[in-house]
Image (tube, rainbow, N blue to C red; front, side, top):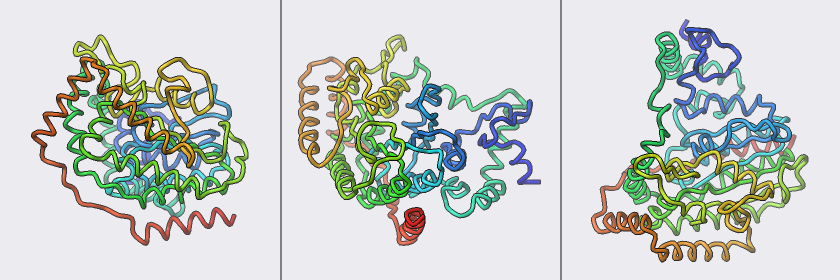
Length: 402
């Protein structure tokens, strides 16, 4: 009965066509686990030729549906995802013959010493083993049952998760920009980069390459308020280390041609859309909500208009500034890396010398934080272990042999 109720309500939307009025017509809690349960299943069942994976920046910042995308498109972002989860997701996507191209968004957070996975990861196909076992784990999970109860109650009473629905209301976005200043500064202050996670992710990507799929990995275009928070908190060296380590993994691979490529160029590509590029230097929202930033909801999360610009850049389509080819998105490889890192420094210096009123304001806020640093966010450090590597190696080698 416990599992049957969860199955009937289907809170994560695994059977979206089954909608029962007053029971689950509205999947009001499908997002509560960061879409992990849904993504784990969709990786195996999607008919889309191209998928995109990554954090909430992907989930919120890219179109959910692109009906004109050749071969079909599906957004499989997972809020708060990690390099560990993305590597595991890659091994699942490799097994789906319908998928031809995989786009993976990443930033520094995925490679920090945070827990490898979120709680509901363990009740999804991402955790490995037969899909039937994942279904049983999900149906008998207390957290899934709780989401089913919430979904049923919301449908019965007309309620919903209002916090989620109003997360990006225009009249509160300036306030959220302001909140991010100290929040990101504190978070970066205790950040620790783990280069092993870069190697882990690219080992998962090997499964995709072995199946002839094209993979485009890109670094997210976050707003300058977030980038400067990291710079002031001292993680810029880690930003560069991430790019250098990713390029080293790129250079260590010589994949064959993709069977059905979506983008010009090699089967494995690495792009950088971060680093004080002009689109990230646009003004924050006005306090009254009447002058929103056209590209960003908040410093860490961008609008689907910018996600579409990323896709257009990957496809080589023409766009107008600030998302044209000369100002937005650069291919990273061994030959371009040093030049692009130097250009990043130059762009930051130019922004600091611009004299713009809002630039002076936010740098003044960071000056105050530098002078009186807030308490740092102290968390336990987590690292990949031998079992993590053994499971990944076993799965990737099986795909490579097949």
